[in-house]
Image (cartoon, rainbow over all chains, first blue to last red; front, side):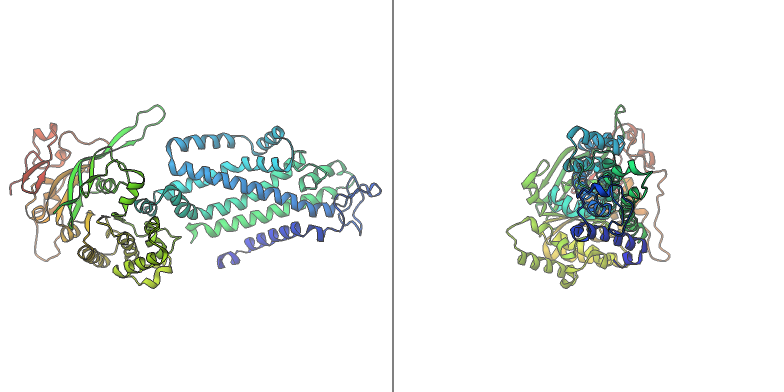
Length: 271
Length: 322
């Protein structure tokens, strides 16, 4: 823990994430206007005192939309990471622990999933199932399952040859007890690192999907679709695209900084 | 004395290599091993690394399944036992591992580590469990108040004591000790050996003591099994093995033990050649390419494991004279 506080980049990353989360939680208090309120008279206005980030094509306040966008962007990322973490851990642990045929069956499916470019696969899934927030979470979740599965499988394979696992077997512990009591707790470090990195990927992927019109359906604001809606006005009012873009950059930077710091700290080779 | 453990013609073959199209090669890691452990007895299982002694120990513990042969524990055939009966049985046979660093889960407290096996018995409640953990820790020379610490806070010798406590807390009848002292400092080895001997007499344990250190084995064992490339070459009383070895391999092994006394020289029989690969073992007697007494018959015919005299078993066509 002391090592973490000594890592300046990690602390900065954590601070950024905390700020993003607080903004998402307290969005109704922070947003100066209703993010959905349309005012034709303010259409495409440049930043002003009342609307510091300007107004979009429907005259909605971009600042409020970016603030509320944190809710959707972070929310979708959180649930998709939880989804891929849960499924990936189970599949990876089963594949690594039982090996042979089960391992082959699971990992070949994972390889096939990974063979598709991530965003293309997500687009395909959303296109097939329909564009709503739940489906976006599922699509992003499925896309990132193989990353978790691979990491857990590798860790399980190396851990299961350790004598303490053999000791647990010789004590009569069940497979489930061995996986949950001995193997997974020892996989925690790579999992935390991957989950943090997964957040950064998920935010970017959600933004890309929204930008392509397959993410959170309008009029709900997400960083990706604010960016998408403002791209037509880029030549008249370039700042419209800068603010949502900055928000994405800021959040992804935070998660990446934290992820890198955690990887350095939790790497046993560096201890 | 009745046998607590008896293995007969035990075999374990591993598949090695192979892929989608290539046929895997067969490694006969354990190839027809027979011996028994009497109640209260310590059997030393010795051999060079790779000879299958650890595999034999794990087969006896049912940690891995035998390809063929039988394992009898306290008179009952346990070769194919599974499920609940196997779990119950496991309490009666416990294992002590070689590496005290990898055999203890780094994320568990010492008390939880020692008590893990007891959790499988719902009739032992938390209080009884804590009592037994404390008793086991005291028996192995650890302070029970250290049960809340993590393994990394202990030295190698203390960690091995934790491993021993984990085994004896289950009140086993048989303990398989797989190189329990070879990872330890020499000064600590003696303490752990003495502890194991004391536990044997206090708790009425039987040991299957696997080691490549003949000095340690001579000290602790009642009888000794000598293995070479997956087969038992000689099985006899400790004294007989060390004073009158009948198998040429045993004799060369014993002649290689250094004597820590000035001026005393043992007649050394140098072993020529390398241990052959278990992937491609020599024909006939596995030892013939390195045996100074090998004759034609040794090359072609596998020597049977036979009784030479009372309690002395050997697999050799031309045993040495007494």
